[in-house]
Image (cartoon, rainbow, N blue to C red; front, top):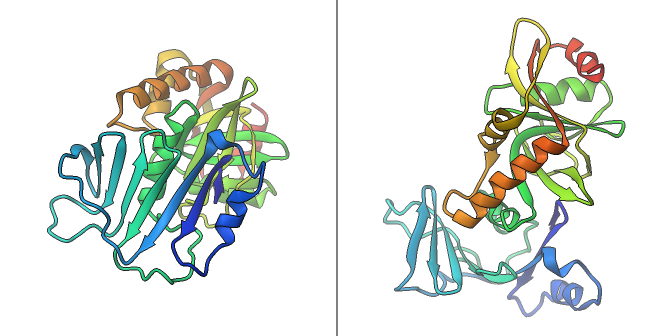
Amino acid sequence: MNIAGIKLSFLHDSPHDHSHREELAKPGSGDEHDRIVIRLHGDSPGPEFSAARNVFHSVWTLSQSGNKYIFQEGSQESDAPPNKVLILGTDLREGDLYIPDGPSDQPRLPDPLGYPLNQVLMILILSRRTGILLHACGIDDNGFGYLFLGNSGHGKSTMARLWCEHHATVLNDDRIIVREREGKIWMYGTPWHGDFKKFSTGCLPVSKVFFLRRGEENGVIRCEGARAVSMLLTRSFHPLWDKEGMAFTLEFCHRLVEKVLCYELSFMPDARVVNFVRKI
């Protein structure tokens, strides 16, 4: 699985499944810096870590024991065992995923992590000096990259539909990864869409950033400096549990607003906003 240039390779523990082992054995099969190998273990609760330190918990839990991160899918407030347990080295190079309910010979899934572990892991990987995951709609308008940021109800899926009707490519209407590459800010589509089902895993440089808000007419206000950084940060998914990761995320937001023009966009939810944005 390759998302935003970050490759997750899953090794199944079935003796009959050698496809991933063969792929990993190929020389030059990927950038090792952006590659994580996860071994799958079916029908197993995983090892216990009695000295693990609780780092964060909500509907999932993150603990740390020595040089290991332990992710558990499920709330600590529940007596039920976790649905999945992911154990990773703190260098995020490799790890083990334990799925208690899954037989070891079950068919391979394209994403065995599932929600929310897939996005939690991506947030952590990105915070290691590679990028951020945004609550945003990304549009490729014939090579012009427009990034529309907003929280739920701000109109991201509406924007996706309107631009699709004008023959633009929708990278995603809800989750966009942004990374810095060769001095430019690039955005990448992800498979984690919202109400608009079409998505693309393509990428392109970001031309402009728009913070969405509904209005009675189409209008823009230039947004820069600390205000732009604050609006970007509150529309990103960041590792609240990790001081170093938060420091990088804040630094990245500063670099983004310095490199890309940012605006607050109020808009009417009809086709006129497409040409309005194209003329900015």
